[in-house]
Image (cartoon, rainbow, N blue to C red):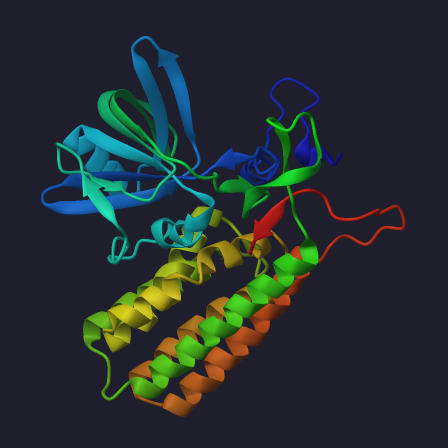
Length: 349
């Protein structure tokens, strides 16, 4: 084990990257935390959720102070935790972004307080904020449960920066109690991720071809802000300094690009690809293509501002090729003469 990943003496510093890496080995479910404040709905993807005590029934959620959802939760005094089913993987990237269209075409039910509760989830917890506690960049929010809703289905799992699902194991203890194993096949992950990237390319090219006039100043400003954010989060030309912020910037950029056509159907099709979960596996790898992709987003905005569709097409194709290269490198199964087959986690992107 490298020195960066261990602490062999009191006071030894552990980097943020080391903590992120070691915690990626802790398999969790994925939730969406939602709230309503001043007639607006807010929501964010969250894995830092835990049960605290049974008497009174209390849970905690760790929320980034910079998120609009954090402000909505602490201002309104209530929130909902929706535990995602395996079929809801596409919601992860959407709610990890700072898009203004997170709830578009997502079935919700209103709680008595008016918060959006994701209707198709595995379970929902309606919570009243009882206290908050500072924790660096985040705030720990304690919520006492007021109502819970439990539905049938299988959970969406987050492990090693991939979403996945449980599958029945080959061996079973009894007919009534089968082993459940996380199944992962690196080759399938690569093919699935590349397939979704190809679909994304088709949508990007379609958006560019459908543009009939120059975008508004606000559209350009939003795109440029997201592109600049992603570039600033690439350090030493190879590494991503903050994974969650980078995913937000990338998904936000591409949703803003798709929204140039003002087509809800096209936006829905794009979101179904779950590009956020495709991006995740490659983010922690050191790769010089990272900066090239970030700079490519800036160049794409410049081409859009000048109305040069041919230049825009060239940039999106170049971006696609770099992204495919990163995707294949990120999910390629490790080569070892001792390897006897895939581990047991079936991941998505």
